[in-house]
Image (cartoon, rainbow, N blue to C red; front, side, top):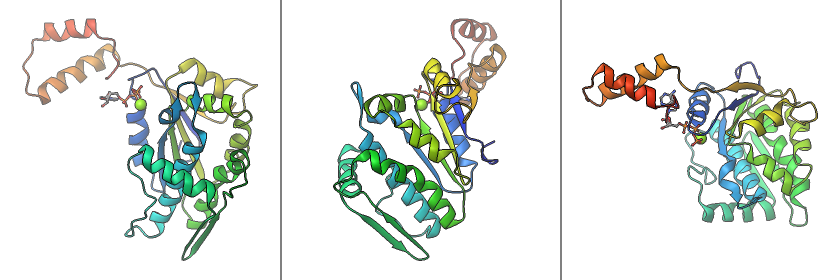
Length: 245
Ligand SMILES: Nc1ncnc2c1ncn2[C@@H]1O[C@H](COP(=O)(O)OP(=O)(O)OP(=O)(O)O)[C@@H](O)[C@H]1O
Ligand SMILES: [Mg+2]
């Protein structure tokens, strides 16, 4: 579905394997891809939207650039998220006009000091499509634990509308979101009065069946060189709930 451009929501309880599915799926795509977890930006009851947006745009830009010149290492490529780096990036992206002029692409990225974050959001959300067109390759963007965007929306009312408005017209970007707040996420993507209604194809991750769990545990133990009795395995399966973790 991703390869056909259908955006997908992977929904399942904690520890069920959402992140594994997301990362594995991303690997199957050939174009630039971005993975970001919204969970890291939750601070108590609020959401640090400007850090999220700064990190998100830096990943999008660096991914696009690395597709153009894979051998070059860009300073904006961040493998790990650290608060220190984020703060630097936020300062860079939020208060400076970033102009990247890499042949044959020239990106002008405005986040002028006087501009409020809300006004810059639309541009940020347009960025993947703009870059996808420039580099001629489809983008895939994965946002893990995306139910926290709901928190961001509570802090910044109206956030979802520019998101939906931009995402739905992007022909070269596919979105893959995941979430562990099953009820909240199903509501976000499946209720007629919600901005994301009908946009994501929902994929519900369920726990392993008894048969799969037996096979999974058996193979795992064999891999570890542990010997076991069939009865013990059956008993373990009786006690466990089929969540892979
Ligand atoms: N299909 C699978 N087969 C075997 N192990 C798996 C599978 N899916 C996930 N796991 C293992 O289960 C654990 C949890 O997986 P993962 O972190 O992907 O789940 P999650 O739903 O993202 O969890 P969280 O709610 O903590 O974010 C990991 O140790 C992972 O290696
Ligand atoms: Mg996870």
